[in-house]
Length: 201
Image (cartoon, rainbow, N blue to C red):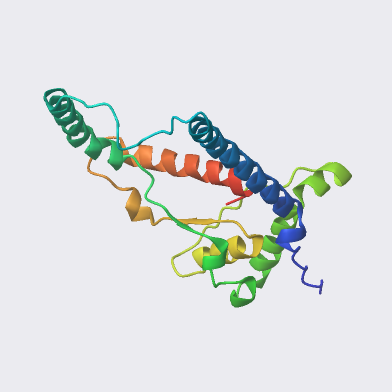
């Protein structure tokens, strides 16, 4: 019998390094976004004309109130249909998930295949450069309720150090025409977005 494969450490794998680069890139972008208004405020302070937030231009209430009314009316009319097409998922960070692969029992052949797939996913750059292969981009679990599909998926997310986007099938149902399809499309758009940001999902 073959030995059970060992899982690659997520932090030291290609995915972990890519995630750290993405995190540093976002921090640099945030630092630049905050540096521009800070430099403007310091410049105003340096020339002796500080920016006074309590001395803003006065606006006529007769102009603001009708505008505010129509904005609120538009929100009330379109919030239901727009909100009905949003993805109903809940995001769990890897540190919030207590389930690990060691907690998954009774499906050893499936778990072995999952570990091999996770290793290829975590070391996708090395696998592609050294072996010329393309790792799997996803796994689809199929089975009756209670067979461990969600349990195993949560363990995979925790071991890989990526977010877990949970959604129940019934949450996609909607009374609005076309909203169910929009929810499904929105869910997969969010999955792709999170996967690009975090290295996987």
